[in-house]
Length: 561
Image (cartoon, rainbow, N blue to C red):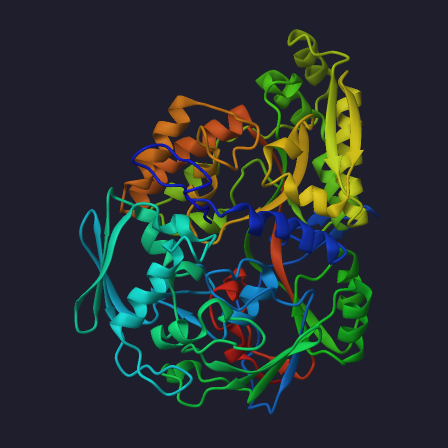
């Protein structure tokens, strides 16, 4: 959700509530490299054959019948690090979430609950007080202390560490042990997002002694980690696998691991992954390619589940100095894109068209129908070529060129680019598709020079916390992820005000205004939502298919089917 404040500026007295580009760039790279984007399921969708594909979100899977000696799990790439300060991609996080823990825990429904902090309080608008849980031990048997928490949190703001999660602490004035098992964080301005971040990577805790001992080598294949989760790191075979073993002294007896061991195998080729699922060679995995869903649904050797997610597929408007700088042209392009057809062709029907840059799931803290208001009344942008052509003509943009970036990482990326180009052509624009190498594509998220001359590029943007401000804060004037330099003073003021509101319902009321402004002005073009997908082989069950797997110990719930 975050970005380093030294690199990415934000307005005085506010904080950026976005992630640094690493998760964003690797999100798109990883999903495309996996052979597909992702999937959405919570309502029927039309497939390429014209049939209705019914798919439903599942809150959990059947309870296990017993224990396991071990199970295998596929990830599409080897983690770059298990250092929590640098864990910033799907492979890193889905392993680490079972080994290390945060002060607070993200639940499958994206609510938060006590974790290593037995409770938290917000006694003044600028202080957060965490009572650290007693009776917790690290995997080497040493007890968890408040000093470990202080050392772990402070590490994110150490320039020598270079944590991409540092901006979670952008408003933090001090982190102190204020009693034996109490830690107090003081912020310079009210910051509703800080406490939410403590339920993800910024809140993870490691032994201070281990951090001091391992230094710059902490978290690599040679040194590993020493945390408090239900599994400990047993073995890391570089280039091959990571093996975790059950930690029998784990403090949360309701989440004692049901398997003695978990082996993560690195399978980068999507066909290899799917064949391993179907054969039973590998028991499970997240992020199922959409073009493999029907294969797996037909397999007798397991079951595919759709779960809660926070991801929206967008076309980012990255050049507000070109034709798309005119709101009428952006609106016209939205009215020309056949998003239902795009879902059918690019996602085999396993996705849902959306008009918002956030999913309903990140508004779940609001009560009394307030969250519904964020989506009610949004402009829907149905296909209307005639009206769209008139908007382009009125804007004086007819025959103007727009450049759409894509990359040969997976066939679906070309589907998106071709669909947007066809829409642009139909309304009088002259699109040019710029196909660039994968490595260069990722720099679109980090380097303004790489975006020069590009009007649109594709992203799969996910929230790490269940709050819409994580998305909308990145679109404020001057934010690094406001890639096109869009600016709206009313939007900025709305987001900044909302960040300072502690009550989630009141905060959602203010955030609703930001969502409606973004829906009208279209700094990014929302295309469709995607859910979490997971395959469970016939041997295993128990996991909750939710994006929370990146931040909570999901593997501990898996047992024998």
